[in-house]
Length: 123
Image (cartoon, rainbow, N blue to C red; front, side, top):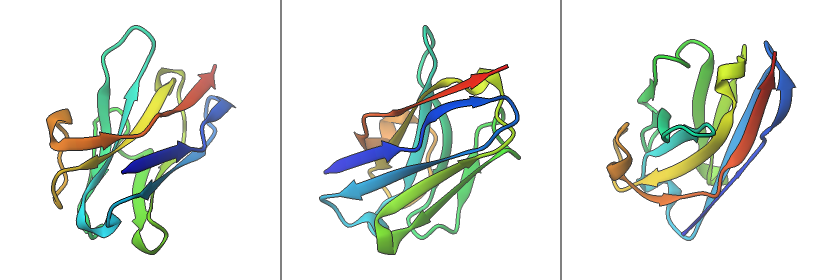
C-alpha cells in the first residue's frame, strides 16, 4: 500500500491550493480516506475525511467552510481543496487510508499514511 500526497506549496493568505493523494496497492473504493496536518512543534491533527463512496464528508472546525474533500475512485485519488488559506493552516498535510468504509476522525482508525506535502501560508 502506498499513498502519494502532492500539491503543497508556498502561498499568500487568502489563496487556494488543491492537494491530491494517489493510492496504490489496494482497492481505493473500499476505504474511507482522511487528511491530517502537523504544524511545527504541534501534534498531528485531523482535518477532514470522506467515506468510501464519497457520500459522507466531515471537517474539523478550523477548516469547515473553507476546505472541501473529494475523491475520484476511478483515479484512485482523494483531494483536498483548500480555499481562503490562513497562516495558521501552515503545516505538513498527510493523507491516510482508514481501516473502514466510514469516515473517522481518530488517528487509530487509519492503517496507512502518506509521506505528506508541505503547505506554507504567508501573511
